[in-house]
Image (tube, rainbow, N blue to C red; front, side, top):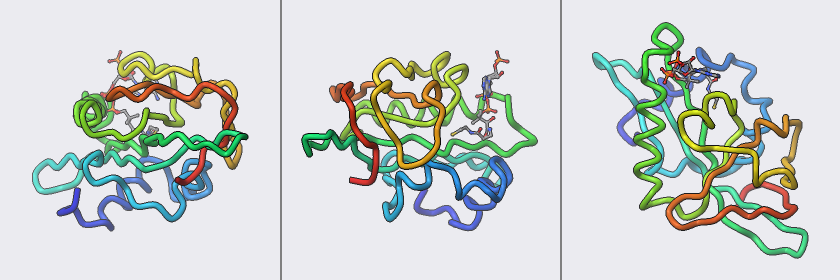
Length: 161
Ligand SMILES: CC(C)(COP(=O)(O)OP(=O)(O)OC[C@H]1O[C@@H](n2cnc3c(N)ncnc32)[C@H](O)[C@@H]1OP(=O)(O)O)[C@@H](O)C(=O)NCCC(=O)NCCS
């Protein structure tokens, strides 16, 4: 991802999510953080950026003050005119392969279970007592273990590390 023009990433995210995307709760979770370079990837076709996936260091902060590191997955975005052509799955699978050896915490995301559960094993099973610093639908707060990192299942606020 380091050789990709950051403005091209921003333009692609605007196209996929709309320019009002900054109000989303996911943006509050990663405030002040830099994307994890070893888990963030770009899909380039004919010299143009057509897909992007970024991951961010976050944590589950339990009421007793303990902190469990997590990796927030997303945004995942494919250029609208080529969506539903398998590119999203390819990017996700590439990231998951890398996460199997490189992730320093379990994975979490805010996303559609119909997509991320069906193809990539994310569920809301462990996240029922998790909270976020903004509005969210509980069914869309998803997580999965990876690289030997189990999911914290108790109450906790997700936020920056
Ligand atoms: C969601 C996204 C990343 C998927 O990538 P993609 O390349 O378009 O999709 P893929 O070709 O990998 O997967 C296609 C399959 O997933 C399904 N699918 C795609 N998005 C879906 C969604 N939001 N909910 C349920 N199913 C979905 C398709 O129906 C298709 O299933 P089929 O093969 O049975 O027809 C892409 O469509 C996108 O950028 N969307 C806008 C931004 C967004 O919502 N990002 C995700 C939130 S972080």
